[in-house]
Image (cartoon, rainbow, N blue to C red; front, side, top):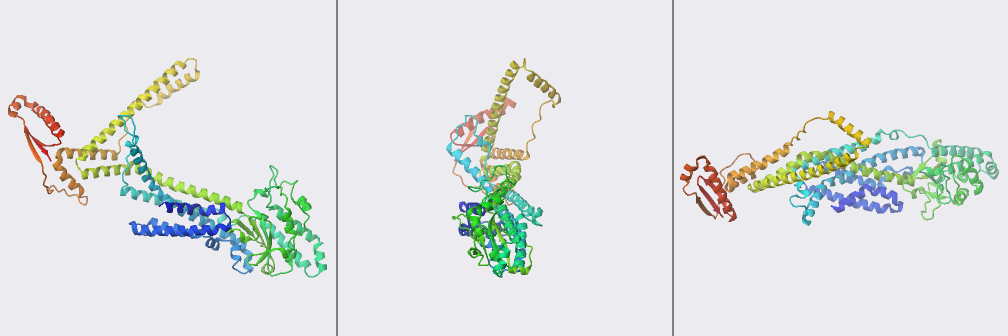
Length: 635
């Protein structure tokens, strides 16, 4: 149970913790733990199927099956195949015209992943909710430990636990708790699965982002220039293009795009002035600039090739603008100025590009070095199929900050679902437990005691009477304490009343309010039917034990044990008992009756009290009283 509980907690939070605390290299470890969790949960289902009646094909059986199967979505290879972005499929598919809609495909996959994630988390939470029923066992354990350590309460006042009896959970309680939990689970699952469909992002994309607009502007300017100048044809064409105004505009637009998504803002040495907006406010930063296609000439002119760091930063950092764009590092500017043949081949050589990431410890060179949840891919959409096959851009943004924040929100959402399900299940069943189920379980416990030993009813009655006296003493003690505090407060108020206008106004308001209060004593609350029934059972059992005695207890016990029918069988077979019988007689009872007349019963009862006490002191049992004679038994 402890292992499955730990694995359940991992199943709920492990995938989010993977995104928050680790990088892609650790995914294989998490895949192994996820596989182990699936194996343990499958074994648990098999054990429950073999050992628990009514589990197979029941509500929790299907819920456990579904929650176990959803762990498949946490295995990175399966998750990326189902919900991955265009890069995930680009490694296995050839570039084609249909690739022009990769951005739309990625958005659709992202929406499906969010819906699946919500349903998956809500389904797995149910495993934790089933632990709510163990709170009752924990309360049992707590009380038992408390009683074993001993209680040092004042004489005449019982422990606070005496008012709180822990009974074995009845079949009615189990059924009601299970049905309540089912309904709460279904309600929360429906809410979690339905909420995404009421958001606009589920049905339509949001407004185009700056990255989408920028890459379209850059791509159209680049392709138009390439088609017009064809700089790869000869040296004069190349010189004409590099010195043209169009090339200058393309370079300026390229740097504007990079600075607007500057990945260095907020890092050491790139501090943003207080109160200024900057790319640091965004959860995405430029990471990879790639180009692919069948053409061989245009890629050489893709990068701006301007290594004048000071001039570039002074022109585009926005030091005097409302939007401060920070400086680019020397490494980044040198990367953007290098020859294209030094670029990195990525995605199984389907495209080449450069990375703006400069941390040597992370070694991020290609988009596939990031998880699909940690990157955002942008393609140009203002192009034809032939242009896509010839040359296409692909810009990748590092959204690890956004991914970690989303994972944190998912963890918070999961905790909220746990609280919602647990609070809902306990709240919905608390009133039923307090008003109906707990009294029924107490009655069942007392009936079982009476069924096993009908004479036990007398002891149960004494216990209940003792508890009532203790409660009455406790209420009286509290009432006396309250009255004493009230008298003290009244005395202080009386002494401070003179010269205190606030006290006078309050007393005046109190007198006015008394006029509107209901006069007369409050009526005592009507007792619950379950309490009346419980006390009636105890009284009936006590009367039966008193009236039928020990011999009749056998008849009562045997009939009460037969719970399959309502027929009364008074002919219970007897059994041989080794005993000593004594017979006690009141001497001259006839003369005493003539003298005492109607007071003879008082006389007989007094003698009976003496006889009974003497017999009880010597471990005997008064069996019956017939007029002036008493039958006594020792066994």
